[in-house]
Length: 348
Image 1: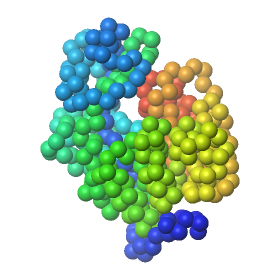
Image 2: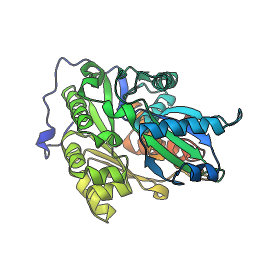
Image 3: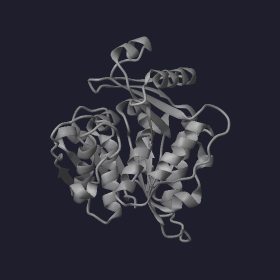
């Protein structure tokens, strides 16, 4: 599964490893999205930057959550959706009829229980042991104004408590592909968990996929990401800006050429230009699917990855994987929210 030019990727495959029983296992930030309509006065009163994403502490998260509930009427109550980037991808995969599971840390509190139930109701296997001490379950407070603008206030909470202890060998070995979320890379404990999961997957002959998640993450952890990609990753997901940031260049072709030397498969989205999938030096250019009106681009990358990974699990070639990814991305940007609302099978 590794190129001869990157000997660090060569891992002795465990001949006793069982055949995979699961298609994709995602590991990422377990965050409950709390979405509610507000007016601009609400944003101003609570010092929320319109259209932005701000990290907040636990006390602020609790207060803001309470304020949203208090200002909502019976027809406009806050909506809770078990989310996070990798979780959204896994839900998208499950909606396509492909078996998937998730690893992410929540607290043993009411919100954590609702997160757990939400993922399981979406068809995912989710068995990560919740933490009984420390911060509460992570939440992203999403205030939506009448113009459709989404202003996010995020408390990372218990999701930062994920460690190597949460990486279960038999669970990793059960999946054909292990999908890692770059957003989780902020703590040393999470980095160690990533490497442990990747090493177990490689030893069992499985594939390791990584999404870079955000240019901000790349700029903070560039060398760690580059090391992970070169030595542990088989399939990389990134958008153009993230790829340029990874290799500190302004030229897309240069960045893609550099990446193709160290990673077997790269799936790079380029907005309205579609996407490019490079498979062992072979380039597949995928057109973006037409959309009548772009409503909300939240989750476009997550659902592109869902389409690509689900298609691969179905045995499609990489070009068709990219086309299904584009279709999934087009569906999700046609409405609010980061999850599919229509059956992709019907759109096909």
